Image (cartoon, rainbow, N blue to C red; front, side):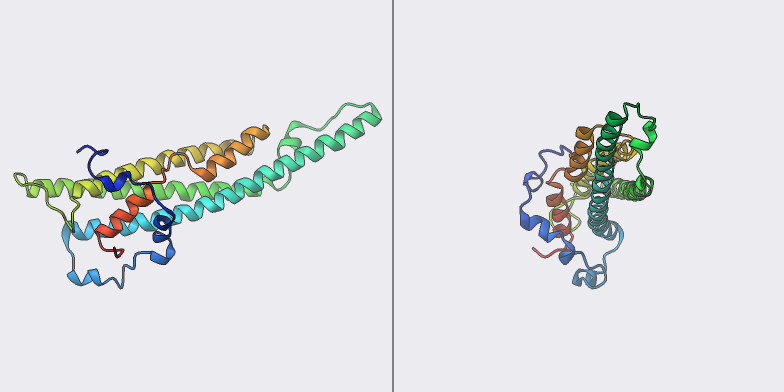
Length: 237
């Protein structure tokens, strides 16, 4: 199936209301939804539950991204402030004394308190990697459901599980979302590994900007998630 031409709903860029509809105020209520009265079973139950999982995982990702952004800011500020103070103080002292600095590179690059921040930063990226592993599992399950549905209706046209979407559509969207987040976590991993050792102010500021804006996660992912929740009646139209 051609992913790019399948459905117009996925090409729509999200508005502010799209984001608010996927906020905690509209989180899927797995326990109380009236849709559960239909007692879904089999493929429909698996797909619907995983749509709620996608929502919950992306909400958790956003929380971790905020935490990581704050830690990245703290790390960069600590390095820049310490480097500025060190350079200014030493320049004055060395000029007055006519001496040469004996301060090691490590003392300049790795100020006190940096290690603790980096450990917290590493915990954040570890949690993000764990989320992407769960996202991959959802896509694997969707693919399994798709194969099962295909096997059960070999000579028939694919039929919607809920309203208008076939299993293949859920599968395609899940794979595209998974690809976005997996690429993004690799970028964030690189930032996490280098930020403590980086000395260039420009590079450090770029790291902060990249972490915040998440270049691999397109804004339209909000619309895709909303579409899945609407299709499976986790959200009301």
